[in-house]
Image (cartoon, rainbow, N blue to C red; front, side):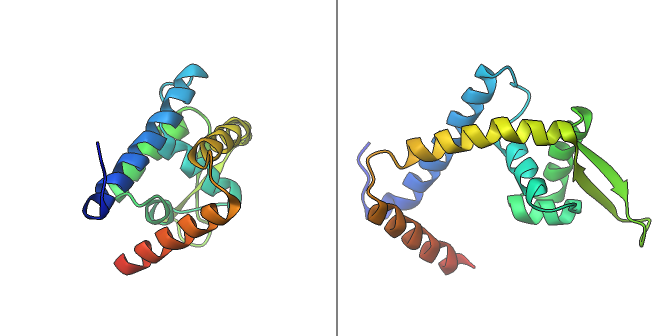
Length: 143
């Protein structure tokens, strides 16, 4: 398919889908077919913060709370995260990365590096910077 400036949004959507398919196929090859790229992103976020609420996770992964709950439940069941009630407010629960989740992040870090290398194959450093700047500008147009 040929793309032009009027189909840029379609092109961005196709890139997003292709990247998710790439990661999901790699997860299947590694014997982890029950997980999708969104699971990896949640684990990555939790590796950067000590704990997060469901609302914080939902905002960061750009999903609604019900979808986030389903994703996190699968991570809980797999033992990659745990839930802890807030000491300050018993109504609040935090999601925390487990040791098993940290190990999983090691695998997904390698997959992320492979994805980035594939994404930018044939790009110069200047082109990479320019693409990032242009996509950032597009995103700011919607926020």
